[in-house]
Image (tube, rainbow, N blue to C red; front, side, top):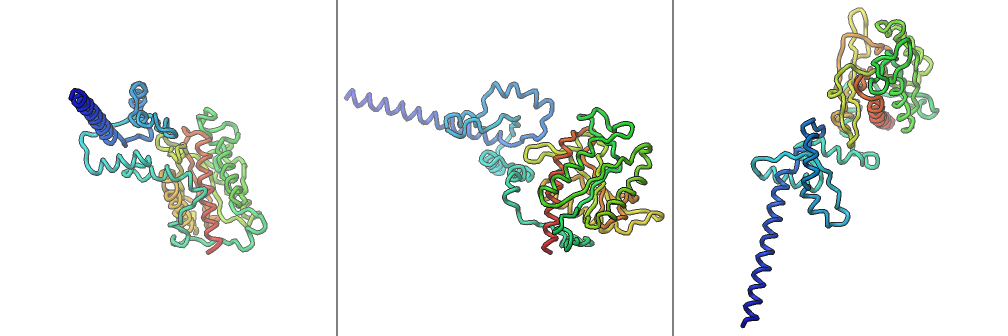
Amino acid sequence: MRRRRKYYHKSKMIALTVMVMAIMIVISGMYGIRSAGALSSEPGNAAAGNQKWEQLWPNWRDVLFSGIPGLAGSSSPAPVVIKSEITAQSVLRGVVMFLANIDIKDTRSLFRVEIPLLAAIKPESTVSAMTVPNFPKFDFKSTLTNGKPVVGIYHTHTAESFIPNSGVTHRPGGQRGEIVEVGDALAKRLEERGYKAIVSKNIHDYPSFMKAYGPSEITAKEMLSENPSIQMIFDIHRDADKRENSIATVAGVTVARMSIVVAKGQPDLMQPHWQQNHAFAKLIDAKLNQYFPGVSKGIQLVDWRFNQHLHPRALLLEVGCQENSKEEAMRTMELLGDILAEIMAENKTE
């Protein structure tokens, strides 16, 4: 009889212990769902200041995963915002964030997860030259088979630089700035994809910065006349803006944002190709938004010419600003090179 009572007493203690543990797991799980999400891609100073406290207080996922081989350390500490109430939508958002690190309220988080796979698995294109009105057709019949250049690159403001690298916004006395290296990065990426590019490093903005478009027009004309195989030509600049307006994140890496300038011309400066240039700009902008959301600042239409009357696919690109680094701008050129390679590949088969 004493043994039976002792057995019942021990069973009750075990059952009570299991129940308490189950309640603790449920409570910690609900807390985790409520606190998942609201991860900022660019934490502010206040959030950075709280990291010291977060390092002292264990993350619940790290605690749960600490005993599971392969999952320990898979969660990086991040600032958390606790919501005041739990709804079905917040629970679903928390579960998806926990399992897949995707915020269902931010479609860009899906791209950040999937972009590393684009090199191996390319999604079906949803935009092409066929869907853009006024797009000028390429002429690849005698171009790609003989290794001739199909892309031209030059810089009207050759002295433009990036403060983090050189300490100045423009190199003085007719020196070449880092913007020239940005153009080289685009040419290199295109050649890696099988498309030859030609780059001019002629200095155009010395002695007169304001009159630089005169000398750069001569360079562009010579480039086109000596290389009739060129299918597109770019005048690459860097913008003047604040850093916070000029950075984006692609696959966890910071890149410079880019804007596309299309010149419509003026009554005394005719621009017969502006609609074709605009169509080309819209195609590039759409593909950047498709694959790398946030990188493109969009298209600017201006009442000028900027040498774009010389070719039906001539554009001015503003890559980053003076507060970006040269490396951030060069990464953006690698993305653009992939976009241009896809555009040309599509048009070879159309």
